[in-house]
Amino acid sequence: MAAIPEIRLAVDAIVFGYKSGELLVLLIKRRFGSTKGSWALPGGFVLKHEGLTTAVHRELKEETGITVSWMEQLYTFGDDVHRDPRSRVISVAYFALVCPSTLEPQANTDASDAQWFPLEHMPTLAFDHSVIVSTALARLRAKLSYQPVGFELLDKEFPFSDLETLYSTILERPLDRRNFRKKFMTLGLLKSTGRIRRLGGGRPAQLFRFDRRKYEQLQRKGILLDLT
Amino acid sequence: MAAIPEIRLAVDAIVFGYKSGELLVLLIKRRFGSTKGSWALPGGFVLKHEGLTTAVHRELKEETGITVSWMEQLYTFGDDVHRDPRSRVISVAYFALVCPSTLEPQANTDASDAQWFPLEHMPTLAFDHSVIVSTALARLRAKLSYQPVGFELLDKEFPFSDLETLYSTILERPLDRRNFRKKFMTLGLLKSTGRIRRLGGGRPAQLFRFDRRKYEQLQRKGILLDLT
DNA sequence: TCAAAAGTGTTGCCAATACACCCATGA
DNA sequence: TCATGGGTGTATTGGCAACACTTTTGA
Image (cartoon, rainbow over the protein chains, first blue to last red):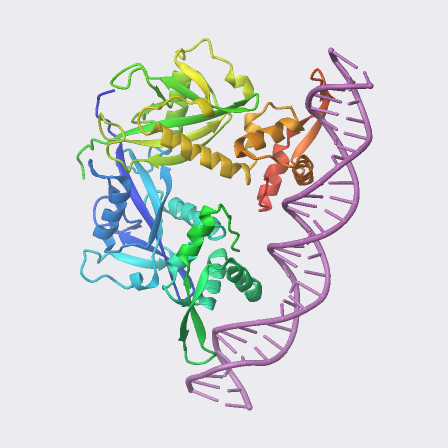
């Protein structure tokens, strides 16, 4: 009961970004050990006097320089005793979303080995990390339809079409533009900034913001969303 | 990197049972340490060469003699560094359901200190265990409406009214009997055994079984349930 | 014959779907 | 004037919610 255990506790972060119609994952190149040179999720061991959430944020910052806009615990991986061949490690995985401005490389950090990969073209990952990514992706897809997390992947102000393309990309199916817009508009989760985006050819688009206050109201009333 | 950490890893189990219209939780009375005599969730430390799932089942067996019919990982609690005042412990919580026959006290075990409590009349719990129970309860409620977990709390064969009362109890709201029945019947998740239950006064009820095969079929087709 | 629990149908409404054309701009 | 992307309306349908009485049994 009092013996110090030899199980090590890690946290890993699956960070999704979104750019020009592609879903991206943030990976780092491992610098040490037997897995040196291979790609993996950012993460590391939890310090003794540090909460789990603090630990993920710290590791992310150290390894990639990135600060996320939204994060939530995903799952704890620890059924396979040999998931890390070096020793017994269990990992609490978190998944996070970042907005496009965060995607730019962070110069002032030790993040030289961090890189964004389109989900479609991910390299092979170390350990069981590709399982973790699949789990996160499944969760993101599910979540998209009952919690307005999509906004975390967009700029603060965005044209409606960006939202539509985002959903359509992540869910991997086409959406009817009119119906999709109708539903979001009816929910009242978008407020129109007066602004407009011009984009070369084509009609300019109004810009919207996510109305977080309205969303919290709905939540308090116990209203469940259905955002397909 | 190589130092052995001083964080200890525990698993805890929230086991729900259901009897005569009440939702029950399984608790144990602590025998040692500063929390001696207070009630807590069954659980304990994970052994070095043991998967997490194995660990919960082992602890449950040791402390309560109970084998569950359904279990799933709930959440990992480790943000509060002092959640266990003795040392840094993070806990992976699992929540589980058992069928009524399992509720009977298990004689041949070290389970003398295990006891079922109606949710409404739970004692104060050690550590952050009441937070864990609330989390589990919220999950159970949510889950009930899109995954047929309710059956895990009933006997193999049950009259339809049991299912209805179960839902109504856990969700804490009345359900329209006709609509509820219609929905379940339409889904085809119940198959009627030819049998009948007589119960003193009142018309006898047909007994049903949950049709697991049918459910798996639906799942494979990607059909989402909506079981209010 | 009464009390207790099981069983059953219909209607209105709303929300999801399907579907195709016009608008505003820059080149 | 054309290419590009933004923006909009309607008709149909299927599923959900609301609603109350009859049936079968034991006492």
